[in-house]
Length: 175
Image (cartoon, rainbow, N blue to C red; front, top):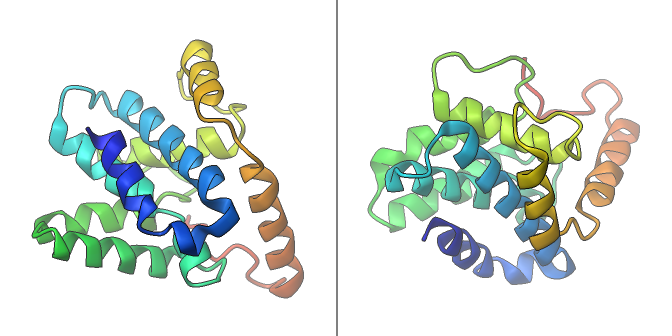
C-alpha cells in the first residue's frame, strides 16, 4: 500500500518533475524499499507510511522550487501534505527524515531516520555503500526501477552548485 501512496503523491507533482518524473519516482521507490528493509518495518503499516511520505518528498524541492538548497522546500511540501491528510502528528518525524537524510554521521536517536539516511546513501552511491542490503535486493530494485539518468542529473546539480557556491557548495549536507 505505501509504495502505491508514494506513486500517487508523486503523480501530483508530475508537471513540476516534467521529464524527470520517472527517474525521481524510481529513486524514491528504491529509497523507500531500502529504508523499509533497513528499519525492519515490513510489517508495520505506520512506519511504512512515514517512510513512503518521506521518500516521496525528500528531494522534491529541487524541481518544485528550482533550487539545490532543497531541504526546506521539500519539508514544506511534506508538512502541507500531512496537514491536508489530517496527520499533523507525523510532521516532526517526516521533517526529521527529510532534514537529516544527507547527514554524514549516524543518527543515534531515531531508528527510522537512520534507516532512511542509509537508504538514500545506498541509492546515491550506486550501491557501493550497502549497509547490509543484499546484492539480490539491490539488483531486483534496480531492474524493476531503473535509474533512468537520476545519478547523472544529480551529479550535474552538484557540479553546478560547486561552481556557483564554492564556499557552501552542498547546503543539504549536515554533520
